[in-house]
Amino acid sequence: MRWATAWGLVVLLLLAPLSVHADSGRDAPTCASASAQSLPPTLDVDDGACTTVDLGLLQPGDVYAMSIIVVDDAIDVLFFDQNGIQPYELGQSYRSSMAQPASTESALGALEFHWKVPPSISAKRWYMVLDNTAHDGDDGQGDQGGGSSTVSVSLARLNQAYWTPFNDLVAVDPGAYEVLFSGDELRLDAGTTVVLSAWDLTAVGDVYLQTRTQHDRYLSG
Image 1: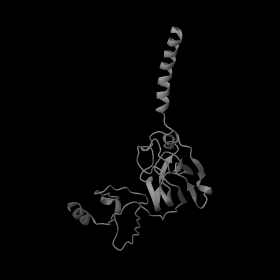
Image 2 (image 1 turned 90 degrees about the horizontal axis):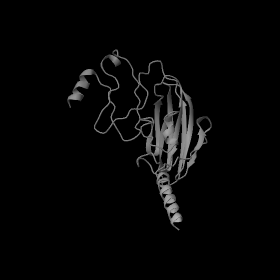
Image 3 (image 1 turned 90 degrees about the vertical axis):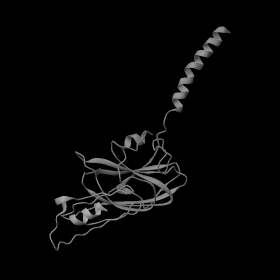
Image 4 (image 1 turned 180 degrees about the horizontal axis):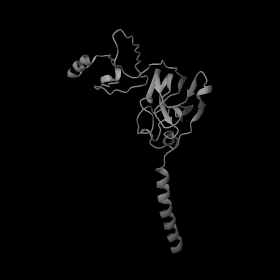
């Protein structure tokens, strides 16, 4: 009986750390796969599910017109390059590796925007994840599931005009501002016609085209 008791204690001591280690692991999501070249008109993303859309090998600097419509329940629309998606796929913390500001959490309704492929040495494969889960690596932020969503996605590469100094997303925090051009970066002759287009992705902001004097007055309040 003494030997049996001793062996029992050893087994319990060995099993206890193993069970604690298993509980501390993170669940890797199992996402459905889709290709941007063969997307159906709509995608159903059930509660607790996700879909990874392969956007293909994209050249840095190219601009894409994106149209995403989410109905029924909010989801997270996340963009990753071929390296950044790995933490998401492994169930790890991914917030620092998702592309900003293209990634939109708790997205619901229509999202229309132009997205410029971020700079890199060479072309990379990019992915868009439609996430309707409480992912272990989302730090409790964004959508946490709760209901099924229906999503429609379309994207097309834009052939830009010869002179297009800026065509991309800009993120501006509440109470802040962003200057896209300053000094001699945007010098125009009198009579020059400029086409300026802007869309609100989340919240509403103001867009100004100012002379240097007007900008100085803006800064002075």
